[in-house]
Image (cartoon, rainbow, N blue to C red; front, side, top):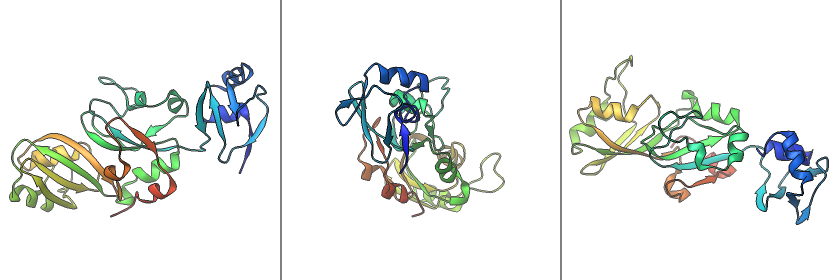
Length: 238
């Protein structure tokens, strides 16, 4: 456990600059255990600390680990160019505390997207050395055939890739839908693999990362949740 002054606590949680947090506290906008705290230098144990700012309740978190069910037409960029950024779906505090996406999904791809302000976590989850499988559900333009599934399992050659890329597993879900599991995470990989196999991807959703599934999280499109330690442990191989 650690003890910090209230202004530093608020700053660490994304409520602005230290000076701005001091002014907020002095103005009587911060409460702990139902008591208004006006001294920015008052110290508190951070472990499990609950507080309210402008009447909204918060719990202190040294780092945030988040799963978002990303909707279509949002960009995984802090400087989006053509569509809103995914950070607009979150409280402003997340921008202040430098929450970033773990990898990216295309603007028109939906499904599970991890986000955090923990650099070590982001690096570990993004590292290709981890070989974490990611499951996608793709809607295809042409019917899903046994030949298509076999080709995706055998591997297809993509432009600028030195060797063919193959799915870990692939299966037909419906006439125009398939499930494909990848671990490489190349640029537009599912769409490019389907195109190289003679089909076309009309819609794409990431349904799981490792053993963490979107169904288990129960998130509707645009909804998000904090990930606890047990859920983060599921972000491993299948």
